[in-house]
Image 1 (cartoon, helix red, strand yellow):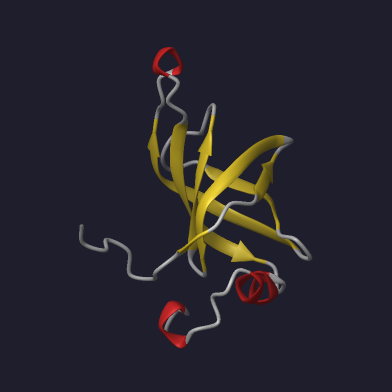
Image 2 (cartoon, helix red, strand yellow):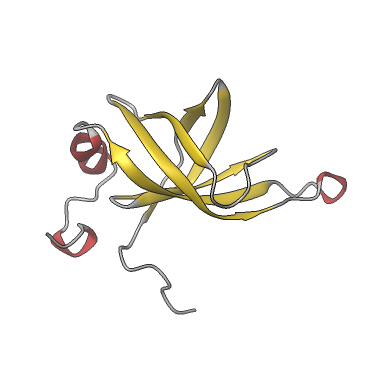
Length: 109
């Protein structure tokens, strides 16, 4: 399967809180993250929240760039991809915590 993203992500599971709703990441990168949840907002929705690592909490605002509705009858969770619009300075610490310190995974400057 070919890579569709311009900036690679690392598979990593952590808690994301958006307006008191818990989501869990499937992958995280310098440009955004993927999530699974029981319900996700539709594509184009702006979201604001916190990504919680082991030692760091990162505030962010972003936009849902894609969303797939799950099927609870088949035990399928909803999924979505969120692109960062604005992110706190602690993102660098979070990326180091999950092992994205390699130059090829960082966005071009």
